[in-house]
Image (cartoon, rainbow over all chains, first blue to last red; front, side):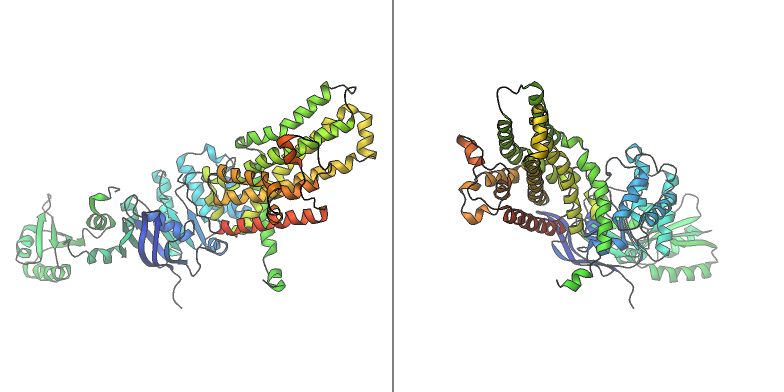
Length: 314
Length: 281
């Protein structure tokens, strides 16, 4: 049996004459998937489409086989932490989570148990009985997160979930995402903080102007960007010698010795050939190699190559 | 839908969900700064009739005249203005206030059928409208004649008074049911409630001039027939408001109003299913 997926089938969404997203085809497997793109690229639109908060102008969305037009089924499996920083008036953090668990139809004892569990998960137990209106931005973010996960959903959609969190809370939250991803849940995250996206993502979806520019595992996406030579960092004892040998190859477009004279940054149009060549040069010249690693197959680099300065969100 | 399909619906789950939504909604519907003018609409006649009782002596008019004045207040103020605008404020805001406060998405992200949500909100609005507006009708009825003392008690407890009060309260409650359904629907469809409210108001007021079939597609048509005092003596435009052009017996008027309200509610629930969360104004 195939694994459950979140599927966008030729989905477009227009706001009047303004494009939200256009002709999106995606099939998102379990694990952590990051939506990356500048403001207005369509990240929130995609998330809202998944959750049924807005409807596609064309095409169809399904989440684990459930269309978002059936919220009574969808939200038994999905939790969505939106960007909206607003809460029903007059509720404490505890009441906020508990009330919406009761609305799910849970009996009070079960709702109370899940509320306590969710509060503990985001380290908000102590502040639970204070009014949400008195919370700091970070606490409001955490209580939203707790509300989204309280019913133990298998699909989590998190729009800028790290906004407003202090470094400690940020690290804890990222660890939580990783745990959920490893448990086989779908965790869909949008974030502007690319190095954090890079740390947690199993796959990325890059968006620009409402179009999906690239999707998949980041290394795979990077290798598809043919017009930008790959950067490979080699740490060795004779980087100058290595540079002179590599420059004999047509596919090597640049080689730069590092300031400490222990490293060489190579830009090549053919990474596979470079690795083979590197083996030969090392053997022929008796080089001592400490490390060989790609230097630009991270989200930040791919983002810069595909979306570039227009994004301005890094 | 067959009977077995209806029986197989998750009624217990829906009952729990309605109760949970009511808990949240009642707080908002009953106590809201935004609703100050609804309290004013409800309290206004209570204060005026109360003052009337305090500062009126019994030598210049009769209890019957007070009854007739109340009948006028009920038909012209309560039905045409107080309950109409009170319901506009309460029911239009059931969705609109959530959009303004950017909290509607929490309901939409709960595993609740949108129809169940719409009905729960309607019930919460109905409870608030009943407390304020029907309460106002009852208190005004009692206050306007309170200065008659034992004569009024006799009239209320051993005469036709209690029967009249019951019918006024029932008519006011049915007005809340009907106008509540109308304004829940307009609140679901339109962001700005004023234009649809104006259209509904015109429609309700031209009711006496409409053909017989169209008359029945309104709320006031049924309510006027239920007023216990019948026609009140009035001149000019007030006469048009008070005239019952096509008297309908209660056994027909009450089901008729409930059917119109249910049709409006069904349509509102259906529209609620297609609602999107968009907070940009």
